[in-house]
Image (cartoon, rainbow, N blue to C red; front, side, top):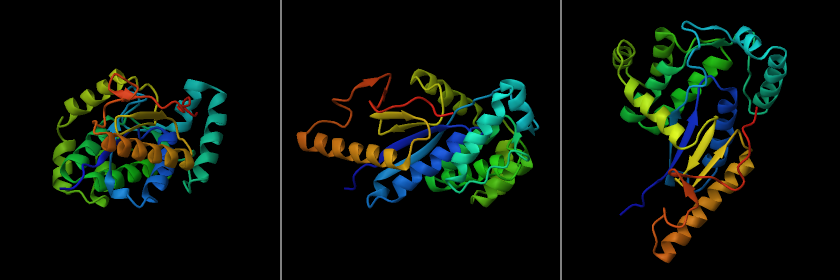
Length: 246
């Protein structure tokens, strides 16, 4: 009998540049592991700005209206970190748009196609948002990206023409609140650790090693993986947890 895979949940929003950066760093650590297939990764929805416009508008203008002079420094910092991950952020072209529909599409990708397709779609959405000036609230743009990720065009258009998945996305966003997740990205590893922010690849590698060690120790001791953890509200907070990186 095969061992159950350890689930890792990534709570993120397409509108968050640090989520794109954190996703790159995390998967570099995970994909380098010899036991990579022992882990299942799923993206979970989070909306940073439910009042974002549809259709999209220039991101630079919206950031300036919300943060004033700070917005330029925020973009420089995020852009510098992104460049370190081979992400060519283009703030002149980038748009801001509500991401709820994109999250519905990500939920569909995971449910009907699996984690690899969902990950591919997430990466395409991030790239559209920050590198290519795409409008991630646009039905045509979302359809194009979903098809590029390997999804069926007719199925995607049917979802986008309806409210399918809305209740599921809302329930997952509410669950994030119950777990105490108030910033993204937040990575919940095996229901034992939660770490917020675009941590370094080395930090993610250490957390994965610790997760594996604890699971092995629990198995050797004959206890369930959920026993003995320092948990609250269904999630465990790593002692190394840092504040959200901005």
